Amino acid sequence: MTDKMVFFPDGRGVEAIGQGTWYMGERNSDIASEIRALQAGLDMGLTLIDTAEMYADGGAEAVVGKAIAQRRDEVFLVSKVYPQNAGGKQAVTACENSLRRLQTDHIDLYLLHWRGSIPLEQTVEAMQQLQLAGKIKRWGVSNLDISDMEELVSFDAGRQCMTDQVLYHLASRGIEYDLLPWCLERQIPIMAYCPLAQAGKLRNGLMESPVVQQVARENNITVAQVLLAWVIRHQGVIAIPKAGTVAHVQENAAALTVRLSPEHLEALDRAFPAPKRKTHLDIV
Image (cartoon, rainbow, N blue to C red):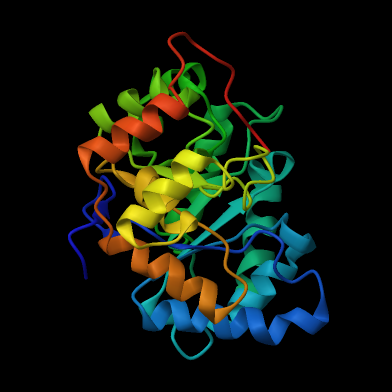
């Protein structure tokens, strides 16, 4: 346990860096390596594992299920439901299918993957039913902007939302204008997906940025560790980078102990400034 714990509204704490699984389970030749990576992450205290029924059409959940089969009690398991499945009987079926692939009887945190045509109130009702049945412990949302979150908490049951999982990295800072402070004020953690901008693919040049590379050199760390440390500099933000190898997991876990100086944070801020007005929520 480090001093970078993040706590959900019900008091459950996790390390500020977890393990993402997007693109896992897509090639049979990679599955053994992916399982080893997830298990190594658990060994290093990265107990939050995030997945979704969408990833590899359930293949990522199957990989996670194999990785945690003998270690379920160590894991804070997060999965996500398609918007078209996030209501009524479809929600029950989707959740049960995820549970089967994950080889478990419950999901610790179940998220609406993005907003679709099913009203939020119906999704919350489905989440409550799944909780009552013991299939999920908590629920939250993903890819919801501030107007959606305000609608969600406008009815009592919506205030049980435990997190909003959104795209957030050094070159995508739109949430800092309104969504991030709104969530943190209400003690709703943000889960940052693609915190490394998919190794820079989402923003050409991010990992090649001279400023980012200089900060890495001066701290004797890697560029990825700079980007992760930057994302979790806020208390209440969880980064969920994907790592398909043990070496990458070790690199990610070490970022928990990185503390960027005010001077380095200022340099990064100058190179990648936050927007000064409302911007559309970035989604990939």
